[in-house]
Length: 353
Ligand code: UD1
Image (cartoon, rainbow, N blue to C red):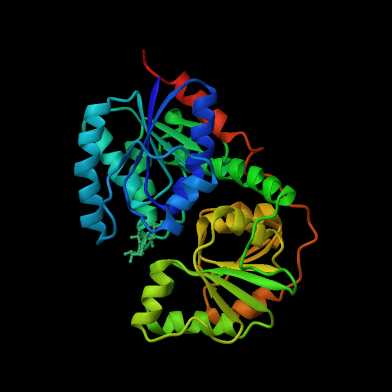
């Protein structure tokens, strides 16, 4: 069996790591195509290096652009690669523009398409990711779902027969990385000498309006402990455009953290403030009290028992960060760390001969 994975953005490299390892272990031929959506060293190659992922077989180097231009350029380039490589499966990850471009390219030339992280829904149609994931699920031949809730969404949309529950691949890599940094701590700009908060903000809804971004930064600056703000390039760019400084009050701005550094930083953090889908879940799994600066989440399980709290109004961030930690033991809705093996098994089982 020949599987062709398409990745392009930071969270997809993290998900690719356990899939690449599981494919090798199962003797499956695995081709990796990088669209080039993310290209900075600390947004891309550092993940390949630190997570031991083989270099991509193809890098399309598409880079940044408007949604249409970026997705369209990827579509054209991917069609050519797919035609040359003729995989048994095109495997796409999550909900980025790279995901959607690969889904369209594969279905147009009748290549079997599998969607990993299928069935997630935020029900927020302002988010480009919501459209990307819905369109990809509905064009996929195999929807590989991370949770029971995702399976229920797929069933509700008439996709039950094409859906398989495999668990969450990010949990696989997180658990492995957490063990690794516990045994061998990594050098980090995050100092655990005093209590601290880890923060990331990168969604257009939070960065693109100057007043809203200023309110979020002021809320972080006013917290009573140091805030390590791992700044995505979009945040740096928008803050500069709006004339806003990141280094104010409690905030220590940092470049994006490598995956082991992020995991180590969150493990020892007092709290996490984020608008990232992946980080909400990682923080939940690592037992960090989390505030998500959005009005909804596709990872609804993190909200149970109050480990994660949705706070759309920046004025409420401080109260949320200062809330009492829940006493309840966290449930385990994201699998046992073997989702990548289940994914490869599902692809093998559903390959038409
Ligand atoms: C993308 C995904 C989002 C995901 C995020 C993870 C889409 C629609 N969005 O958002 O779901 O949560 O990745 O990080 O696909 N830039 C750089 N260097 C880079 C990459 C980006 O400077 O290596 C800057 C560029 O100015 C670019 C901007 O960041 O225009 C946004 O990048 P883009 O890939 O378009 O979207 P993200 O916000 O990263």
